[in-house]
Image (cartoon, rainbow, N blue to C red):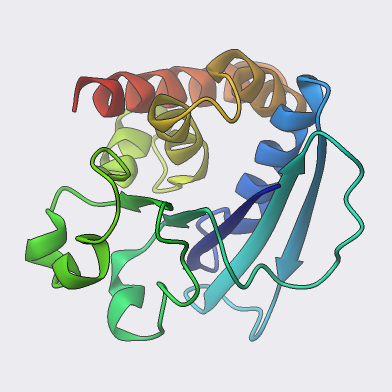
Length: 186
């Protein structure tokens, strides 16, 4: 089973990202689930959501305590909570930033991970360019597909278009493609 924990802040589309990643896996015939977790439900408050993907039925319903992947939509959370709690030694980290892990002060937490398992993408900047809104969720899903083969980019596109039909979906697909291209080039 591949388990994902998505960290962000209210208004960044954390819960929608989890839903779309789950739908993308389902599009490929996999079993998947998205589980939101809310504390204070307000703009800017820390939000976390979980995704599980497997080839067989998933019976777990609790939070993801040992993620294979962390998606961090807001790097200011590194000083607010222990984002890395439980991350597997062979896990992946995808961060919405232009900064390096060292510049973020998280080099020690990420140095144990295999090469190519830590990626940074300026997702908010790409979202502003393509969507005219600072929502990094679909952008980061596109970048994630460049890091491994858990889900294909085309499946993420389908999930985005189901969530956001029409022109909004097309704009989000373009943003996800741009992030995929950036992550693949690194």
